[in-house]
View 1 (cartoon, one colour):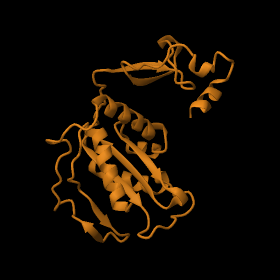
View 2 (cartoon, one colour):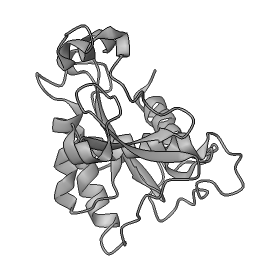
View 3 (cartoon, one colour):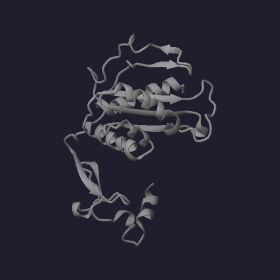
View 4 (spheres, helix red, strand yellow):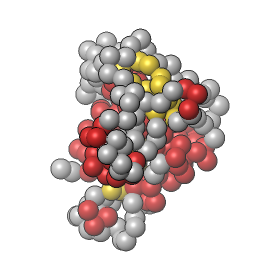
Length: 218
């Protein structure tokens, strides 16, 4: 799979999460070498990409898109994409990526109206160097672009669609706890809430510590 194909597929997939529609085949894509010389594609002023979701068939359930976006907002807040919090926004979602031996590194991130992917690698597959991960090598590039294009753009809150409920869960087991018992808030399909009692795999009832139960699952 070529790097451009990987980027194109990532943009289409993430656009489905961002807009809850299928993006279609019209993408704004260009490739530049290290001095900034255009290798392929069009400069932004010359390109006229179709708006994501305009006349497109719905690709995924709105609830699926919301929950995936919620998860990827957490990636930016507290995960491998946390450096992006330096942009001072709370509506960024995304995911880092790194291939074996640090050959490719990328970050794909979005707000509801814009998806951008930063990829770094060689034309002929070759390691970028130890620890050149998506967070280390690609995310700063993405931040440089998004920091410019989102300057002055208001943040967009994420509202759950019908059929999604917010529940308190134990962060160690993922099981539901009473609101008064604390825990963290997570989102679920209304018809598939997490179990209330800690009976999963018999773990807690059999005396296993929460981290042991988690390790059985993941």
